[in-house]
Amino acid sequence: QVQLVESGGGSVQTGGSLRLSCAASGYTDSRYCMGWFRQAPGKEREGVATIDTGDGRAYYADSVNGRFTISQDNAKITLYLQMNSLRPEDTAKYYCAARAARNGAYCGPFAWKFPLTFSYWGQGAQVTVSS
Image (cartoon, rainbow, N blue to C red):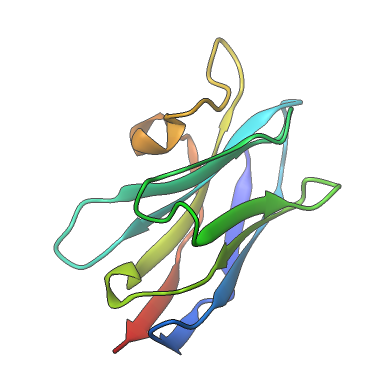
């Protein structure tokens, strides 16, 4: 199965930037919906952004739209999340995730709303934003 490993987490000041990476391996399908999700203490996991490995289209949650950018390398081995203009409320453990794009499971405008539809998950990377 797909294996995902996050890296690049850390601590930054409000307004700062950070870039997360997710190394993927074990692809068995030709197309996946890849995503970034986050979970803060005492809160449920929420979607951040998704990108379709087939057509490259990206989608964002309203809370990060305009500040965060999801992308992937040409080989589709590494997933990235560039985070700019960070705020204290962005503090959370960030996870990369994937689901095979079969039977209509490809990325769409609202895939980030449904973390339970993603089959594979990384261990997470902590991001802390201080004010």
